[in-house]
Amino acid sequence: MPEPVAEDEVAQLKAFLAGAGQLLDGYFAVEDPQRLEPAERESLISTLINNDLLIRGYIDRLDVSPAGDLRVVDYKTGGAPREAFEGRALFQLKFYALVLWRTRGVVPRVLRLLYLKDAEVLDFSPDPEELERFERTLVALSQAIERAKQDKDFRPKPSRLCGWCNHKAHCPEFGGTLLPYPTLTPIPTQPTPADDITAAHNEP
Image 1 (tube, one colour):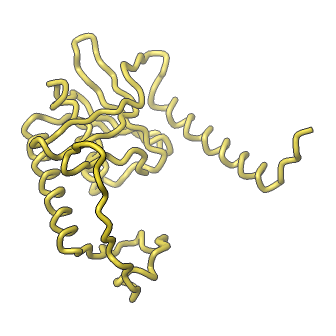
Image 2 (cartoon, one colour; image 1 turned 180 degrees about the vertical axis):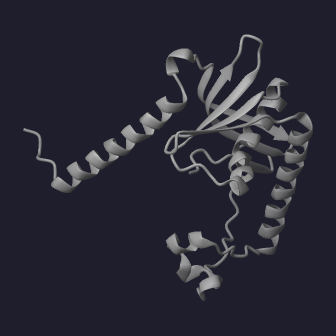
Image 3 (cartoon, helix red, strand yellow; image 1 turned 60 degrees about the vertical axis):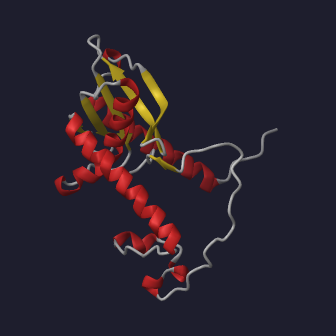
């Protein structure tokens, strides 16, 4: 006979299913899946920038029109951002757009964020010039990370998120003591690009 399930586990499952049901309601409020035929789901895409910076990520959904236009769709379970933070929310999708442009030669017509909690849609249409600027931004970020690694200089960036952090004991911002910087050097098993930047897959 199966073992009985604890009451707290049952309550957690009910809460999870209730939350999932609300997200589904939000999805059906903004899209009719019967009118969609995605070309790809959960697709891993990657490319090299300047022959040494590997960027990659997983696209939730990729739609392709009969004319060949691409629409990148990413599902978000959190609430829609305020207008001032929309650019930060689109960073991930610009990442995908750049990879698709470099690998398939097509700039996506639409980058779409679906906020299931609020039943809201955020669309953005990039152009090649903007993606070129974004590419330069990624290269600059990679170079900054390399300098920080060489100098062993990773400075704290306090924000309201610090309230949820479990590592304050090691953070100078809160009087903590830094852990020793790692000194081990991994031995590569095969030739790899110098850097690897991967897009966040499920940001709120």
